Length: 202
Image (cartoon, rainbow, N blue to C red; front, side):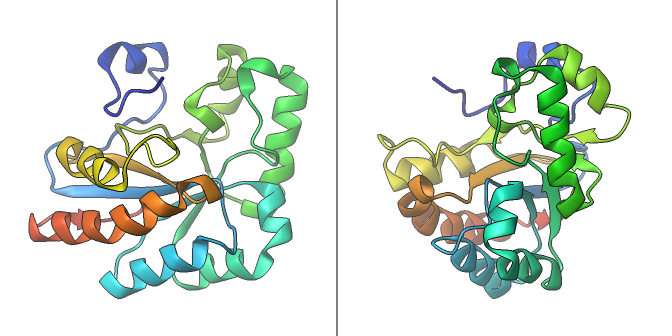
């Protein structure tokens, strides 16, 4: 179960986290979780290059280690990276010390001030430690591209119908998201550019 649009009560649970940027400017922020992987990251990067826009990639450390050339391509093409733990850990099912150590292991690769907890969840005790070192980035538009029961067209609708000024949009850079990302990402970008949104990094 997931909510496409982040509800107000969820934002209240994590008030120090960043769910969206200023609603006063027509800027939006594309983000991609879980990569880099050879099956999808090149398509994402090619699409971003085609439209000449930049995005933020929340990378998993073990995927950086497996695919260093793709991580270097993300950086060399001017995109931003963030920390998404080394092993995509579930914070609420992981001991605090182990979770923080796993994040640090990823940090040695990403060297980023940005962190997004996998699944958007972490214990308050974990976040308390993290807030002093990172900007915790959540989102306000979840495309649902990870949902195997979701059609590519519905994924597209999730993205374009819920985006507004300052939206942080989540796509996934993983294998199960491939058919929805390949369909929805270029169409989402084209639509939002037509609406005069500007794409920026966080």
